[in-house]
Amino acid sequence: MPKFDLLLLPLLGGFWFLNIFNYTKYYHQRIERQRLIFNSSIVAIFLSALGLLIDGFFPEVNNLLSNLVPFNYSGFNQSLLIFLISPVFAILLNLIPRRFLLQLAINKHGDQIENIFWESLIQKNDNDKLLMITTNFNKIYVGYVKTIQKPIGDSFVTLLPYFSGYRNKDTQELEITTDYFSIIKKMIEDKKLDEIDKKLGVTLHKSDVTLVSKFDQSVFDRFNKSDEVEVDDLPY
Image 1 (spheres, helix red, strand yellow):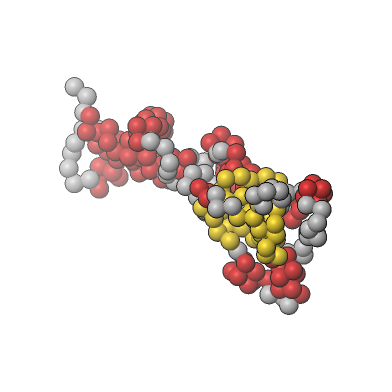
Image 2 (cartoon, one colour):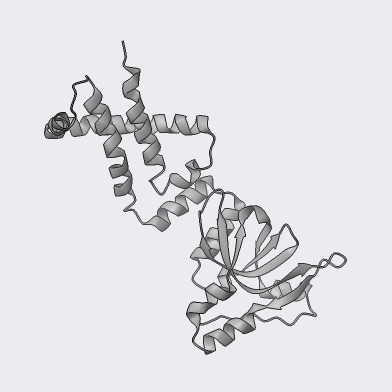
């Protein structure tokens, strides 16, 4: 008769792995419980196979566990080994460059907004980073992403805005109310780079964002001919 109590440690090991490995942890923080249990079970099977390999090639590991565990229960040492190797295996896999793992995770599990935020974050040129972000309270920011708290799911994003405003209800044109660009240029000239993010950074919850698009100066000028806002490359 199978000992179902011994399945608990491998299952917990699978859950532990999913929440440590950079490729899986953000997605599995937002899925439903049944799916999480199923995925933990799948990982537990692979970890069990890895545990059997370790037990076969390094029998001294099992002997060490036998000396540490103060009781003798058939199969317990193997379950404990599976549980213990799960974080070690996840940490080793995290040696793969984090940006590469997050890129894979976002491509597979991220929504359109998360993909646009991520693409902005990894661009090298400031003009390529620029986004136009519309919020559900009719506030519009033009700027670029500085940080993303979590790349997938219930996340916050920090922006460095160049200017902001709102969409005119009658003309649907962007009415600019705040020009951050001139302030940023002044802070750069005064060599206060460290203060830019602290004083001008804007943090939004993803649920507050209704629309995100790439910002193109030439396209913006065609729709808003009356506004004289010029965004050049910044030495920042």
